[in-house]
Image (cartoon, rainbow, N blue to C red; front, side, top):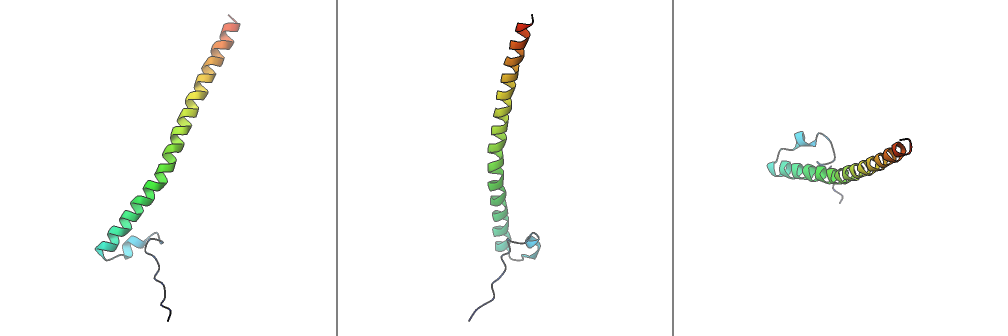
Length: 73
């Protein structure tokens, strides 16, 4: 005998309004917070890499400017 599968409350965007049980609400909120933390973790590493690249590019441009200005003095 096959029972119809319940749709996961975590799948739909407005699922929080449908939840009535406190325990389910808590699980849903914890799931959402963990999901956000996972997505933010990757972006912070990317931000750090971009900042490091900007610093390196800035240093190279400064060296290039010094080199060019020394030649024409």
